[in-house]
Length: 160
Image 1 (cartoon, rainbow, N blue to C red):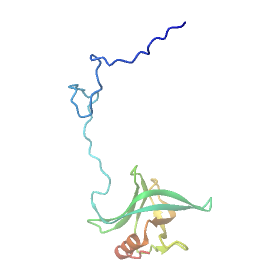
Image 2: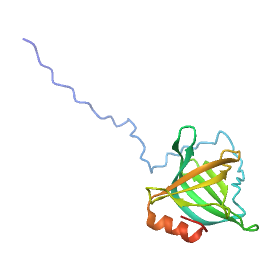
Image 3: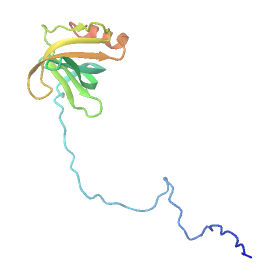
Image 4: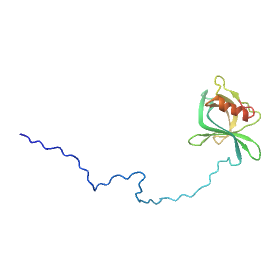
């Protein structure tokens, strides 16, 4: 007859190290591999004051494809230069902070409500976001019309 052996139970050994808890100080010291110098970063907005800052999604009209293409989602700001008084629109994408719109607000600019969408406005501008001056048709869409569009209408001359 076959003899049955009792199953072996794993035994906990006292000499095994338990993993260190997150708040436990292990005493280990790590020296930096590379020393980084602090660098002053300029945004080009140091001489300007933000007069309006809103969250929105920006589109540009692609004439070749005859459709709206998303340019970015993030913070759109109207910046007024402290010395000249000129106002420009600057929009940066929320995570990368890449500029997706950068143009002056001029008196001849016309901002209108987008047909069929009361949360959106459209306008033409000569934009410099890609490093070259181009005529673009923009559309901006806000999350809610009550807060953003009322701020826009109250703060910016010719606002939608």
